[in-house]
Image (cartoon, rainbow, N blue to C red):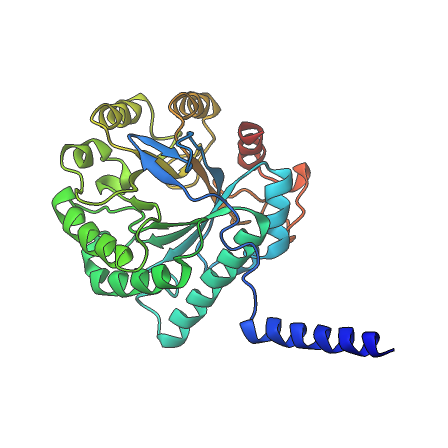
Length: 328
């Protein structure tokens, strides 16, 4: 009887000890950390890694798709290993145009997205989604503060990547983007020394050849984003991409589709197949746009479908079904 009391007492003490440690971050650090070697994304054993996944639409537009069931379902059934959290900076309650309550809500959605992705066993990209604001320098101060906060919060999450400027455009040059990128990369590295950082280039992240001529120096684990829509972008953009690779620039396709560049219009599956071959041959990661039921060609889910997880073939748009075939 005395032994039972002793064991019960020890069990209580052990439970109290665990509670005192605080909540455990489920699966944090479960996925192997990634790094950049040459033009390749690799794991800690220097074996090439190719991320395949989908991007959310704007977190203010379609927050309902950021949920645990959706992320777990896509991991198991769509054969993806990454998800991108697209946080607009200007449009529709953008992070930099909304009020403090809106910024807090967006940060909470990112936090949930990171937790859901981590539990599902997915890599996750935190995307500073500039678009109508064109030049990332417009909200440079906000970007520095945001990424410093994110890097501090997720520095122990080996599955988090940072995308610091979605699509510079509207006359923005590499001479504008590079000094911005230096400041934001420096802010991230002040908190997280190793996370992979994705840097956009002018002309909606198409001028990777210009970035290759004058890349950032002094930092490791940097990659440069290439975006394409097969209905608009063909061989000329692949030539620019190859030129960048030949100059040693690591590329990451953090957004693509097979509609035209507006996100609408017909699907160019033939050109899309050429792009898929190009990316696979060079082991370039690819993230498809977008996880939403928006009434446009580049949405993965049909507008009539209200489900936020567990989608079947009949629930997906022609683009959605085409993309899943590429990932399988």
